[in-house]
Structures are given as C-alpha cells and as structure tokens.
Image 1 (tube, rainbow, N blue to C red):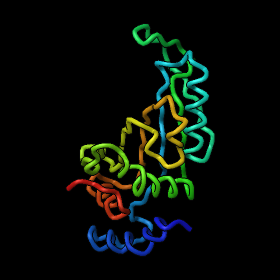
Image 2 (image 1 turned 120 degrees about the horizontal axis):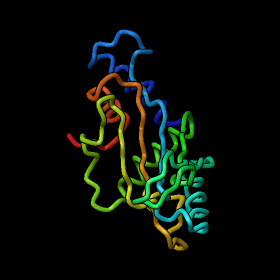
Image 3 (image 1 turned 90 degrees about the vertical axis):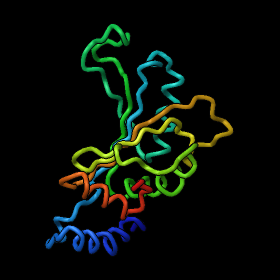
Length: 179
C-alpha cells in the first residue's frame, strides 16, 4: 500500500473530521483521480516528436496515453476536426498515489523557482490544476538524451464540495500549498 494512502487513512481523515465536523468517514473528501494532459497542436505533423511525447508520458504515468481529437476546425490554429491535438492519461488507484508521491516529493522541488502551489490554482470544487513547463523534472526522464522538452498539465480531482475542503485535503496530504 502506498505511503500516501496510509497517511490519508491514519492522519488526514481524523483531522478533516475534527476540522469540518464531518461525522461519517465516507463523507471525508478524498483524491478521486489525476489527469495528465499534453497539447501537441503546434507539432501535430511531426511524428518523431509525437512518438517521444507518447514514450515519455508512458514513462511518467505507467500507462499508455490516449490521443485527443479536435472537436471542431479552427483556421487560426490550423487544426481540422478529428485531428490529433493532445494526449491524455487518467490515473486512479495505486498508480495515482505513486505519481502524486513523485510529483510532490521529487518533481516540484526540482522545478525552477518553485516556492509552493498558489491557492489560485484551485477551482471552486477544490480540484488542483498545475501547469508544468518542463517534463524533465521527473526522475524517470533521463536528461542526458533529452532534446525535445514539452509542458504538461496535471489536474488532481478531489471529491471535496468546496474550495476550502479541497485545499485543506491536499495540504494535509503533503502538497506544498502557499498560505
């Protein structure tokens, strides 16, 4: 079992129950899933770059990413309906907790000028949206043979009813949220 899951069950649940007056354990907010997105719209014609993105995203997440297609044509972006414009991975369960552990304890401290997660990155339902400029901050990516660097967006979806509960949940789980 993941150390984050053990921490959630032993520390976070009692603290959340005491702070918000939640009587039922099942009503305590939890992390539902983690979604990782990479936009490839600019380089949609470059097959070698897309192969590298698929490989690296597979290394980061532990599962194969899914191509996302454009819903409509937009001439300003030179995209056509049905064209591959992004890659997405949804993580749940053990892989989700492993990814969060690597993100919080290894990747975020390695990123440049990181001072903590801003509170404005949380939406009104307590979900966290992080934009990372470089995927090379993760330990799975070997920096020596890396030529193409791409950014990715990480969304941590919670079952919290409001923003305050979501922020407190992730703060107790070890996320470096600014006060």
